[in-house]
Image (cartoon, rainbow, N blue to C red; front, side):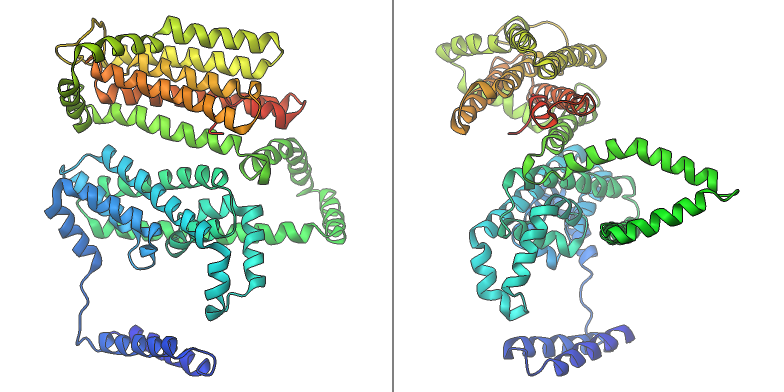
Length: 524
């Protein structure tokens, strides 16, 4: 017997009776069926299969096919709204458990889950954008979603959409519908994606590692996950309390009463010094706090810091993830093996000659020389932050390449088509080819119109991709070397962009203009 299910059935029946005159017949019948099912389950006559146990057994049976299982569920969770029935974190944890048993690779699992989760969210976002307001206006009244409520949601996402997308990723039921609501409310994709990429990366990594580290006890893992959800709920309650307090403080009379009370308490012998210290500390931190708040939730002014954080997160994951995955350093990934086979299948004299020419665009003298030239031009035009961010990103990338090569000393592929010396990981040519992307972003104001800027940026990305492919084709680098080089450069330029963005704020001037100029690898 399960008394709690009797209580649930009684609650459903009470609600159905209370709303019987307003509920449509199909919905009323559905509630009655739910109540009947709850009663049957409560009596113990029928035992539903344990979804967690099913997923665990399925993961062990699938082995490497677990990648596909986790990826599909992560995509469908929000892409098809299946997260209302099957929580995606359960599938991710199961994948981590299978990785802990040695069946699959944890780094590749995180990468697949991260990519498919973002793809599913963006699909749901686009569906919401397509169906959008008209869909909600047509079907919303059936569940009491009126036009006025839709307008309230649109206003909320316009002002707090980034926070809603980020926090919604960590709340099961909200996660399945948040991207659709964001799309239907008219939230721009350039605001949606940075928050979604960051949140999905954090969630996927956390739950994957949770299953990986505690693979021997799935029950313990799921208990920890539930505790984490409870902690997150507590945080959300605290945030709501803060929002209520802020709204209360917006009333001038309330602020005056609070100031008078604090002033009164500051003269008391015991608590007075503490209050005076906190007031001084608050004045010192108000500027930085306001800056971070405005940069992370800037409305229609852009998402420089959030976009750079997303780029840094993805870049660092790729770069450090391959270092972890390539242990021992002679280990080859599936992509490495496919790259060698691809090179052999495509090898021809004319393609080799073309690859030898294109690959020079990633050589340090050429790519680094172009980067230095553009940086010098920017400095002579007094674009100090943009020029220094560009130079600093290049220097960090160069240092990162050589320090990592010395630390890993990975052997190169056999039978290369051109001469190459030194360690294979990461690919210096691939890393330096990202310089062209940074140059394209730095020069964006020199090209009028969004279309011309998009063309220049696309050309920079195309060069970086082409150089990376030539390194694989010429068999001087593995695929993981190329991906690691791209990730390292993206991480370095994102970090220097964030530093320049913060410096531009504290040094005064036109913060919005300088902050935009200081992001050499922004996704704009």
